[in-house]
Length: 284
Image (cartoon, one colour):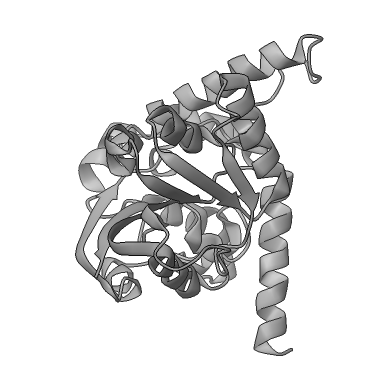
């Protein structure tokens, strides 16, 4: 099969995965198995609960994104998911545009903004990070949190982010790091018996198909054309098993693992084996 056909198939699989389960959906499930009669109020409360869970599990997001200093800036968020961060941009007074390849994610994010009273400010579009529908030098800030490593062509995503940034504009991008504790856990579950490498185990089994990971050196190579590049490693909820188990990990053995997992020991000994690589850089 030609390389172009393989890339197209990979993108279709990524689209199907995230359109079926927008990022964060596990925190937005009705406990009774169906929506209550007062659907709007229920959704508003559950969007708030989703945001609380997100920022409790990943408290570094607010500082990394820089919501507080975004007033008046033209911001592009690539991969809005369910819209938690996108709504924060609007609350901060940014002129924020958000894209996602999955129509379901855009629908969720738009509904979130409407319920919060910001629908008149929302600019949300279905679009591909590899081919952004914006003119050169359009934005002061491009923000993408945990998205570009899912794209078949991550290099192209970063090139596009740089293209639409104004000179002196800033990119803030979270990529998955190699190696990580999360990768080790996936290798122990899926890779060791199949003779897969740590990286291949993540590629095949972390969220959508073909999820890529990057060393610090590889991340620096990705950011060609930027200056003042800063890299920071932080633990993910996956490294520490702090989040709720997804539907794939509901068996009794997994629930037991979640209870006995030595989080303090992992924090102390894991060193640079952290999944989240926070990259900030300025366009020349």
